[in-house]
Image (cartoon, rainbow, N blue to C red; front, top):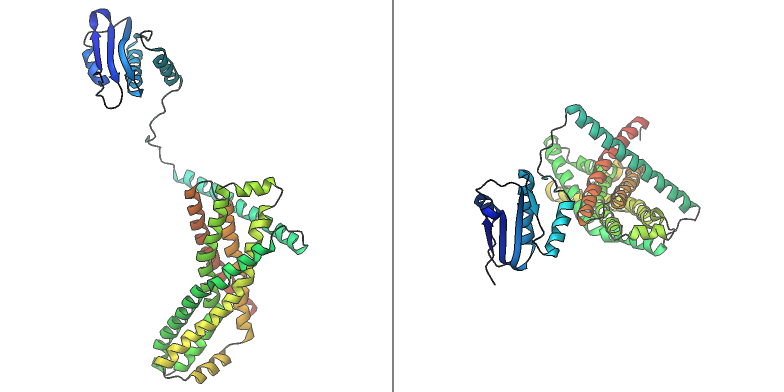
Length: 372
């Protein structure tokens, strides 16, 4: 390749370019040419490219910088000596103004403005939640009337996913929670010689609170995030838009089976977790407190009533609704990029756990008021 050169003839106000201005060849820097313009220019500056061989965007960038310099100095820059293709590219570049730097500093907002922006965002999010819940309620009404459009096969698959497939993690966590409750209670009750009441502590704690809450939190992290990821991926692939185009309600076809499956399975998982938690307490009592299996079972039976199981089952049903709505809403409102799907899964888990804790506290207060 022929070396590329730039020569400035001050007496003629002429710049001569030659050589191959392509990758792999050392191209002149515009700053070096600018320093060579020692004599003050006026009038018109011409450029000659008769000896120019091959060229790429490096040459166009060089000429564009030279043209910009002439505009700043009030000098007319004559492009007639350039190849026609290079002149066309320069016209296209000049037609679009250069964007300002993306690193410009944005003045900080005042405290009042920040409060206003966050309030508007909260109102917008609350409106989205109420709209989505309203759509789900309408879908449930269509389901009751037998007009909801979804496949029964999908419902059974959802039931299997959030029911039998979740038994492993629920088993592990429930037994460990029962062990922890029994061990913490035993350390205190042993001081007073009331070790037998560990059965009461574990039984009531699991049945009324921990069984339902821990199961719901497990499902929020496992199934809620899964729902958000599935629906978010469908949003990215425009499958939800395709359902709307076919006249099929996405709430009926996608959200309703997931909601029904969680509401049906979570109470059953709650009962399963209750008994496993009691089993965990039994293991601690038999091994550390010298309490026989029969004594523990009799004490647990005397401490628990059907109303205690009812409180846990009601909570678990409410938690199932919250986990399903949080997961499905995050997925349906997801953006159309891969990062948005990850954000939707994170949002589903956070919203699900927060709503579970708030609902549990509210239901506990209500139980206290009505004496349940």
